Image (tube, rainbow, N blue to C red; front, side):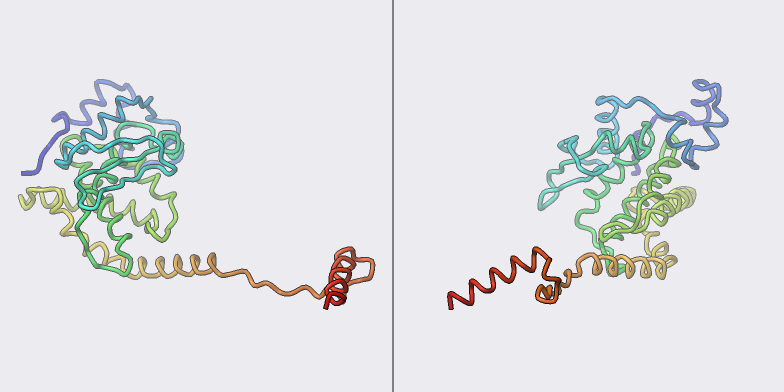
Length: 267
């Protein structure tokens, strides 16, 4: 059965008792702008908070605790062994905090995304040409689903961070990623109301519908990324310099002619 490892208390009641600005905070839980992300709802995140967030997610997915390394060059990533029996989780606290992953809710969702990749290690969806993009969308759909289990985990900052990320060879456009987080929330809510879900991975049954509903957008974006990548890797065309046509005062021409004449004399 679907596990609930979150506290069984209502998010509204928790905010009402702990924060005098509970209403403003509550209504923006799933929406965020620049000021919400970088000035409101920020928390000091300790090493213990990070460990607890990772442990919470690993327990939820019934995964072993990963080997944790904070020396990442990007926000976060997971590296798994060949058979995914061992996972290393890399993260960069400074980069995450600067990007807006600066409270426990957003931190937890970031780790949900990363550990979802371990959960999906042997899964292949084959929905579009770039399987890596689908894997990223699947992980973000699980983020949305996770956010509705137990407490209503705030997704606003997480979605804001995603929207700032451009499409790349490995990741689809951040706007689409944010959209599938919300789609995952809505999809699992409907499935749970109908009693049709026992495991969070079952939410991925709705992934093809999202992909096909945004198929042209995904395809156009993928074509653009490939074009940009081809342009970035175009070899620089070198054109031989005609030194002999340069003015006689040109020092490079003088050096060239001296070197050329010396070679001629050697012949």
